[in-house]
Image 1 (cartoon, rainbow, N blue to C red):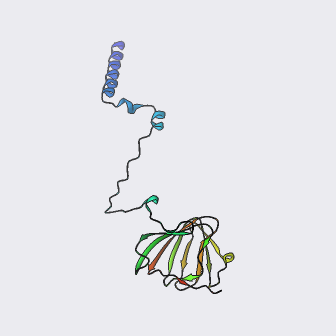
Image 2: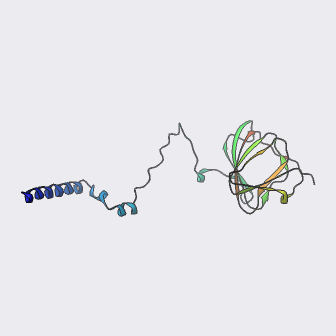
Length: 171
């Protein structure tokens, strides 16, 4: 009787394995190590563009002078009236000269260290380090200058256009 029960169980197990093999499922029964070595590829993003829009880093369009400073407008048009958002990438050893803007500009340092000075006299030794995560407001019509020292700094600027630049340096 015990032999008959084991025989039936063995036949059932053999039948189940044969069915899995015939349907191609046996390959997915590999060991945990085998599955870990060959993980399933990630599913492609499935975002409805009616709900969410995005640009991956390689899709952001930078303009300007590579090696000095480049900008990428994410929203709006800084040269026209209205809200705009832009990224500015300052390359090492590049600074602006004293200037001001007609409207407040709200700035977040995204990466690197951004250096900021204030006043009409350009004095790079007086610039203050703003590490990644810092938040700065360039107040309307107040002279300042900024840039990068030994590393590239990327900042995000949110402002109200038009974002003109008026030189303010006194020598």
